[in-house]
Length: 444
Image (cartoon, rainbow, N blue to C red; front, side):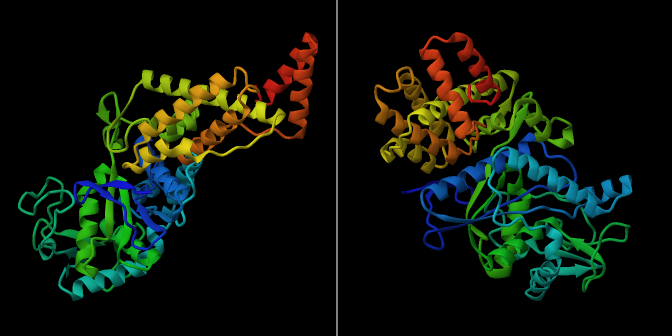
């Protein structure tokens, strides 16, 4: 199947052609683990998990990597305020993030590297950049010479002339040029630090992902690099610059960025206090509602959270759950499995067109509508019902929508048969009692 992806680097949709036939190498920037993540941080988790699921569905083997930035000034600051070690802070919030990701039914990444596990490689990487003139040391700190990369700005369309001190970069008298960025930070505080040829310190954020990609994939070029739109500049731009200087590659052939989530029509961000944590949202509305809400808008467009949108999403989840419950009950009593892959064609075409999840959901809802019509008299067109039921299950799996509806075990099935018999025999007292028990088990 021909898959089109919007490449942020070329600003157009392109056919996906992997570096290695039948395989996809994908890296998605993960969180800096100093606090609970907000709902906006879960959008790349859902977007790229769905892309991964779709690649798997059409036959690709996917190596999916998402990192944790577990060394950062904010982690150190929180550790010092709470009299804890940096590792205690980072491990606590790594576990919290992983719990939210599991609840929204994201597949576990193939690898989840931590920045602190790759410090030696980062030091070796920086040494190479210094040796080839792309970086320089000054008073225990190392900076990247942006002027060494003629294509700098190719991702974000930010030219070197347009960059200004104090805007998106920090003024620093140690720099040769204001545009240069930090690769190794000198530290003399009580925070975590490592020895290096330039003195004690810790790596710059922009170096971490490049080195982890090199280490884990064993090569300086992968298929897809993803993350939120806010990472385009300076983070991803600076990653590309280092990759150009280190190995003359763009680090990834396809760069993909998801849009923001807005709350009260303003960008969700901790810096402004305008956010809702993923943990709290899931606790109040449910993980499936969060995932469906994030899938209902194309990944490159902004999502605006509102009470109406959340309510509508919850109603859609309930509708999907009722349909699945009805199917589980029917096929427990009348087992039949028939596969018709042609029913998935439009769904697959939607996802193959730059992961168009809104159109894919439209195909799912069309199947649900047909299923609910057939379920009014499920024995009339059993084969058609079975075909649509299979398509329904596949669509849910590719979209990662776990409706929490379990299959029936032997005891459940016996109770259901007893209920149906009591109902047919007009033994209403027994059928009501059995239905109540089935409801307790989540079967109705």
